[in-house]
Image (cartoon, rainbow, N blue to C red; front, side):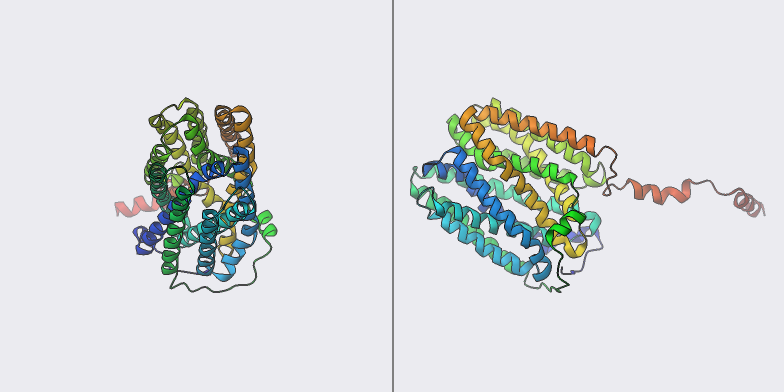
Amino acid sequence: MQNPQRPTQPERIYNRQFWLAFVANVMLVTSSALTFRFAEFVKFLGGTEETTGFIISVGLVGSLFFRAFLGQAIDQLGIRKIWIVCSLINVSGSFLILTAPDVGFQIYAARIIFVIGLSGMFASSVSHIQNLAPLERRTEIIGTFGASGFVGMICGAQLGDIIFHTYPESHLLYYVLFGMSFLFGVLHMGLAIWLTSGERHESRSLTPPIHKLMFRYWPGIVLLVTVMMGMGFAVTMTFLTRYSTELGLGGIRTFFTAYAITAFTMRMIARQWSRTIGRHRMIIMGLTSHAVGHFLMTFVSTDWQFILPAIGLGFGHALLFPCVVSMGAGSFPEQFRGTGTTLTLAAIDFGTILTAPLLGWIIDHHGFHQMFYFVSGTMITGAISFAVLTAKTVDTDVDVPRKKKRKHPRTLPRPRVESLQATTSQQS
């Protein structure tokens, strides 16, 4: 890993480099959010909800296999090279989706390539941003940086709905949609090249095999949360657009705008919660909020009724992601931080792989409401389980131990001999 100069003053973590990375991530998530309509494309080509879930899972399986080497590649080759290569892979995938003629080999291959590139771009950007802050402020900077994703989510959802309302259901509609995704991917790549132009990477000894690092450093309890997060992403980023169409609504921009505004606001408000209430409590709150949000989905019948569930899900997302990435990646030593970051993000994808086909099957055979009930029940069960399993775990991010340590010398009673000497001195 590179060793950039780390700021010693709190305000210096939000410098020019941070804000350029922020804008780059807006571009990346805008590109990704435009593909939230992917399920509509599969339906247009003649597929079912279960087919969509299967394609999503196949793409993520390819991504997981790639991530097995991605972390080591970042550690060995540096962020710049991996970021650029993954950007090229991603835009190639966008082009293949754009030109897919049917639900055949090309769309499966295109989805795999697209997701592989996307996973590498996210891992590179998160690894890059972590290096701009000292260890004790990593959760904070990840959370603040992640707020850029919500800006991109608003842009992508709004733009996607505008495209759907402008063009009739045809191949032209999807040419424009995925063409815009391709364009934003290219813009992101340009900013990535600029951001890392001064990178100086020092190659170290070979990184141990990923399975050895995982068993040695991986905090197992985080896996439970990542599976829950992956399931939530399968709902919002794959099947929500189909739910909106099923209800005859105008699209998904109302949901994602409320979702993103809530999440962005909470990221700003909760930036330092990891050092006050602790990451474990934040995770419990996040999972519970997800459970409520998915349950409220069953009451939606008009566009504006998406707002309440969006607030619940946005609140949960804002709390969960920085905590999970911080706990997962932070458990690895500095020289293996790239591997830790990619493993954590891969674990979230693993949750989507496990649940997307199942959720698609539930929708096909029982309907959307039963799917939302299943997700909500699973989320609340996960929250309770996590609370029980971590009840006695000390959160290392919380500031309380350090405060107690500083106050310790002043609160301890002085030895009697010293007290007598001090009294004698004052009297004299």
